[in-house]
Image 1 (cartoon, rainbow over the protein chains, first blue to last red):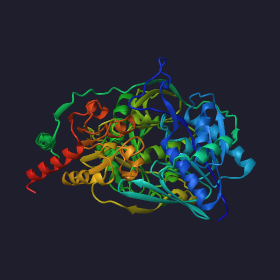
Image 2 (cartoon, rainbow over the protein chains, first blue to last red):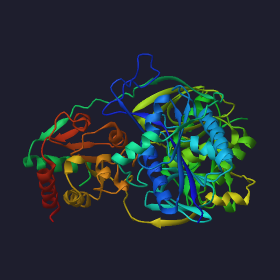
Image 3 (tube, each protein chain N blue to C red):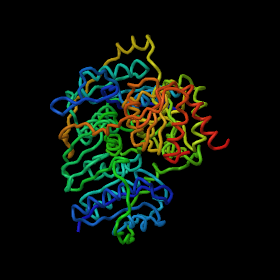
Image 4 (tube, chains in turn blue, green):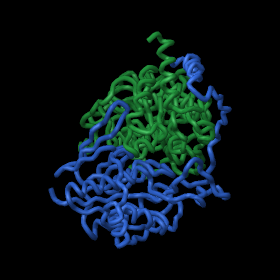
Length: 257
Length: 323
């Protein structure tokens, strides 16, 4: 099989712990005390791309649309084995899904006209923060390529990509002709940690800049708000094994015994 | 006359329970907007039109086509796009499941329309709505400017209930024009790995977190889950440690559960996990840390060590069952 070219799309997102706070203007997540990461589905997409290149040979590229600081996530991807990085700096503005997809589609067309087509493009199933469930699908449609979301298994063959999607009782199998686009989910693999050698090498990876430009779509943020949490008064059934009887009484009361 | 159109999710002729939530939400919306409620199903009619009728659907468009006899996101999305173009609904609603969101996004891409995923509240007129971010840990108020408003509703955000006065559920055949090439994303095979109760349908889930300590230490959780006819779940930290398969993970990037009882053992309750567990009807937390998020959010808790508590609970269950 000829060497592969794989593109993976990632998004820089905050890494929240037990609670998400909102800025006073209700427009953004308050990230004052938070670190940043890429969406978990995308970590698996990056790992998947690295594994496929290790298996088949070729070259992998990672692309992000976001603030200049997203260089951190691009270098992280490079530290675990991605070869090329592209940053589309939109100044950290919150772009709607149609606008995001248009800008990314334009960038992919530009990259492919310069260096040849990607055999496989990987998106995360949805971003961890805004969770629009559509950017990858819009980009694939624009490029005229087959796209399936929710993928937890990928095999690349000469003429096709076999993809597995987890469903309640097992999995569905899809066979997409190449070139293909997939939206992957966490569980595709267990992403590796960067090695010291990988970290050092990632510092030398050149970050290519592509200027994003696209008009706003039809969905616009008004404000963020926190969901109403029902506060429950926790009933403490005990602190040791003697609580077992009270626990099983609860099972009986709920009808689950 | 324009309408509210519900996208019925189904698998091999059976309607997904989440579609009942979509139908219920859409019925209430259609009533407040003064519009008729219609639905579209993919594949041959197998009784789903009447089922949609019991939830209030007046007309059910049946898109019967060889490419639609099994799931395929592109063929389903193209069919929906054509139905939207021909019937011009004001609002299109699906459930915010994997398939529901995927089919709406495929149709939105084809129609070049916005698509608002996972709504929890929609104003009459659908010019503004509230949707989930971060898997439901945060909400976003959005405005929507589009001639046809495509949206999905967040799972478990609306309780399903049949219509007080059923709709006619009248079948109206719909013939999409589909290119054979759309077969490229149709399901070609299925692998069945489990039968019977699954994590998302289990009446009881016994969840283990980092506090369980090792892969082997899940055996007592398995035994208790088995006794209660339930399944074992886990937190993200556990799958990251390789103790359990990812298919057991409950959370934003795993499975959303809604059991009658969730027994959360040694789970701190970070938001990543909590959003996957919060639809549980009752929660019992077993944790040594009284301040853990999961303990403060649970209806009941045992402030003890799961390693001694679970065997004690299992012994008590066996005793009462006469085992």
